[in-house]
Image 1 (cartoon, rainbow, N blue to C red):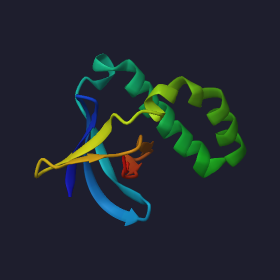
Image 2 (cartoon, rainbow, N blue to C red):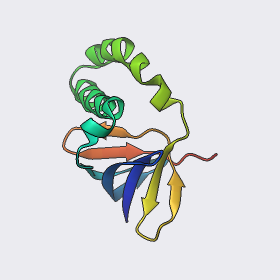
Image 3 (cartoon, one colour):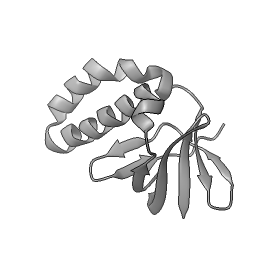
Image 4 (tube, rainbow, N blue to C red):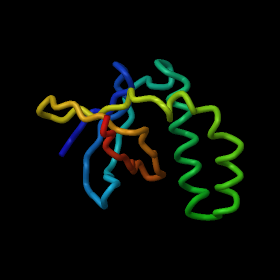
Length: 113
């Protein structure tokens, strides 16, 4: 299944779902053009999320330190209900903030509001 990822009304990425391992779903993403210019905070979150995924794979202690140092910058994005996927059929699916992984992978969970 293919989706478009949105934060509020801003298109963030195109997403192709490829795997489900309850409660997580995953796939690959391609960022929307000019995202950095349209919303610097979301772009910075994506950079942060990718780096966190690298640390998580390589050095759990460094990952923990990185999260403590950086995560607070993104609380407004993390704690909101403004993330959604829109399917090719136009169906809207609320999600929790996705995790962006190196190699253009993405992981998300449905947000049961």
